[in-house]
Length: 222
Figure (tube, rainbow, N blue to C red):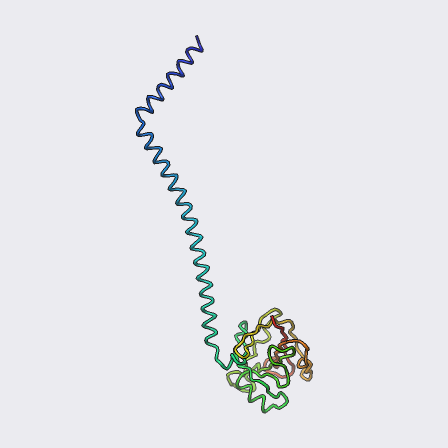
């Protein structure tokens, strides 16, 4: 008798559920449709938001790259034809100057005059893109005068190993990486000797305002 009662109750519940579903079929189906639309909308919104964020990040990244390229291009356009023929640029210490070629470093009157126009390439040393020592020197203070390049190498001491130096030569740009920084005695000129491989050597009087010693920076092509 207990089993029959349970079966009867179960059957009655099923009938009631069917009756309720049949009576409210439109409402239930409408609710199911609304839920489906809401879930679909949420999935679409999440996908669109993530995709939009990624695209925005890419666009911003591209904008930054384009801006940097534009700034570099504008900077290159600001460099004079004279410097592009033979010049030096060291961004870290804000150096941009012509290099005066083949200056006699044994004749003070000559090199002092040439150093008013920029920095000097020592006569008898190599030129860029050759397998030897390119020796360039310049003033570090205004003790000797107040011309535009009187202290062009004043901040040379701030350079460190692995810093970059750019040399312009015949409209080409060559990058060098510093591998040595050293102070030499006044009568030591060993840093001007041939090296048998391409090397850029920069020199200025040291300490600033004195010619007691020589600060020398050596670098090699990157």
